[in-house]
Image (tube, rainbow, N blue to C red; front, top):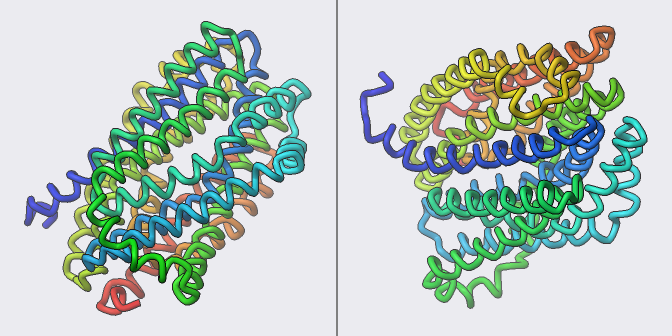
Length: 445
């Protein structure tokens, strides 16, 4: 059934392989950051950098709608062969990204102070979290603009270009990590400055490549864009789509942030151990997102072409490979998880804590793979309302109630609630998909 047409599998992997390789570089870099800090003398360095990173990255994750809507809308414009609409998607996204990033820089003092206060943790963890955040906040405009640029390139089937941009960015970050932390001994500040510089290097490379490869489209669409960029009806539709994905992402990030902050309240060793496990989670999620990213581009193109049969084929092929990759991830952590923990940190208490909870990471790929795939399908269809409703139900109907009931189990209760939360996301979207999407009306809205 799944191998009836090898061309469909090939098309998926032409997009998916570059995205898998590039996506995995992100958590691998996070593991390098964690390893560099994890080999310093005290756990509070790792705890502080983790909390500080969460303070900043929760903004970029909340603004993930910039990448998602840009990819979905660009893929549909690509399917319609509408060059001016395609470029409008990029420019509107960049405008919103720069406004949001600039606003957080202006409001950085109350935001950072409030977020770190809510995080809890020891005085040392809070001190280094503040130090980290005050540096990284200046990279937000570039980080958010990069979401738009990479999302637009992906929507235009430039997955290889996205891969090389991300590899370049992470190599810059990696080299600067080594120089600033291991050579110059800047500790937590060194990791923050490395990421800040890498974010601006990324935006420069992305813009250069776009101007070089899409110059004909840009020149042909300039006059049309001037009159449509601020079109009222188009902007209202754009912000409605972004609003629903923002609410969805806000729910998701509230769970991630809660895990980090609750770990900080359980002690420096727990928050440090959870930092390692969260990097494993990112390693899993970015890998599975490679298939989902390919699916969203192909689904978006199918919607732009109004091709229901193609949509169904994309779903079947991407579901098959999502399950295969999830199984591989689970086996990977079963056999090599404990060894990787010891490579990341040599603080014995942190290693022992991480080992206790590694079981949850072994289960996570198979529990969560459904949610990643359906997110990709729904982004391609630009049906953000269903994604929003699924996430609200999973967050406030599963994650937080379960955590409250299982507080006595401390960190195990926290991770169990998270596993059920991921399962609930997949089940709710699967129900909606089979009931409302698997017919011609899916391409009409």
